[in-house]
Length: 393
Image 1: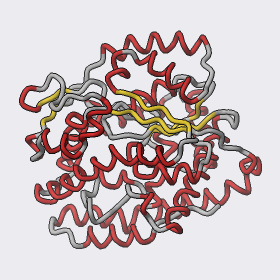
Image 2: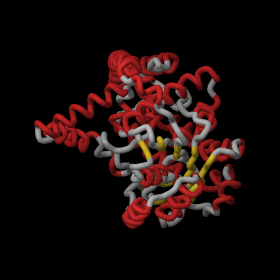
Image 3: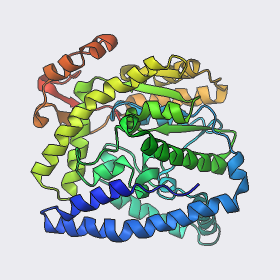
Image 4: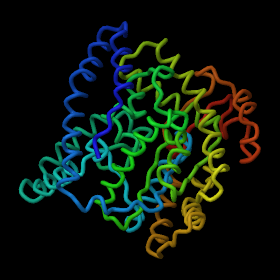
């Protein structure tokens, strides 16, 4: 399997960066796109090709009943993903550093260096990396625990293919770049990127143990549920659902902060935030609509309120929905984790008004979804439309 690179997206990204009026921003992103991306992507492509020669057993690794947690950002996708990820004997996940190095050869080399560091250097390299992490992810960690050895979103494995929505956290070109509506892409383009993603998943299973189940958390994948089922016919889909009056402004606030730190101008950010808000309505409808088209696909629909009030019970129900047996050891671990999660409060505050949104508009456009889940028209505990999130990544 050859490394996938989206030349059309890449050309669009270069064109947009070239036309950016802010000189410092333009120079920085042109350097990233014209220098860093070609060099790193070429390196990845060479290593990806070598995987097939160095690890012949890779092609015998089967991908069975992968679990995909999709849903709107800030709806509890991270909470569910990390609770399930504690069942280490069953699930395999991508860690953040493994997503940036998609080749099996690269992952094994990094693990070997880490082992040598612990054995001969007393973890000196590891400590330096931890210092860098603390500085680099300080702002993000206030709302989302992020680190190189934390489980993260699979979509990042497509970053140096220029096919990852993670680019939008750096380039607010919503409307000009589309990494979300994969189900609507031309068949050839859709199948190419999904086939590459499948090969990345196979490499991770080979690394972690071929008897495990791949576990993925990606809000962005809400726009490719049909493609996931097409690529992984025995896929299991998990959809956390939370009041959109809370999730939509929370996501917009998160993205706005990311763009501000990178120095983007207000008008550019506002245009992208409007597109992102519009996309949010699709996120709430599309996974449920696709699952209705595929009654044979195993699924679990989770109410966010239940996930934060009794996460252990929610995970037990999820296992029943998907037909997975649960060990007593994992059940006891869930009870302990559930007590911890109930105490967790996010410091992330947000309001609808600051983004020009009204609770009445959101309700009118998603009335049937509000009725199905019995959500309040205004965010819970949020007079005037202001809310404080509770572990809602």
